[in-house]
Length: 108
Image (cartoon, rainbow, N blue to C red; front, side, top):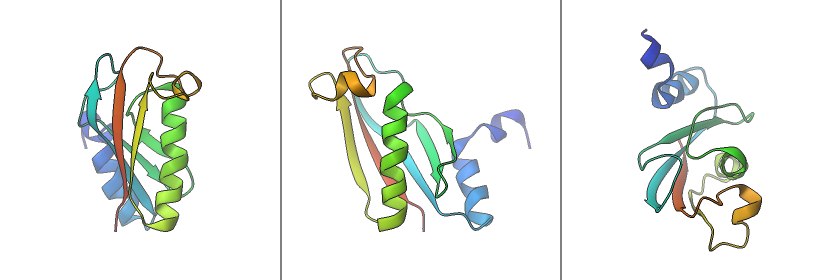
């Protein structure tokens, strides 16, 4: 396995599933303005809150991980949106003027 494969969150998701872990994948599906990560970026989360990859940074990722744990439990996917127009933007750390939309789904 190469260094780039070790850092690929999708390969991590596959490995974790093969190990019997419950896994969710968060994917940046849309960005507007200044956003820390481009569309297509992934964050993989397991049922114990372990994670690899990145969809944003700071508190946004913390919020995505929390929502991913709910998705793992419920099996119901979620579309999350963060941005300065949202009253929680400053609290979750996306005060850069941009917006991101993140889709979170459980792997079967």
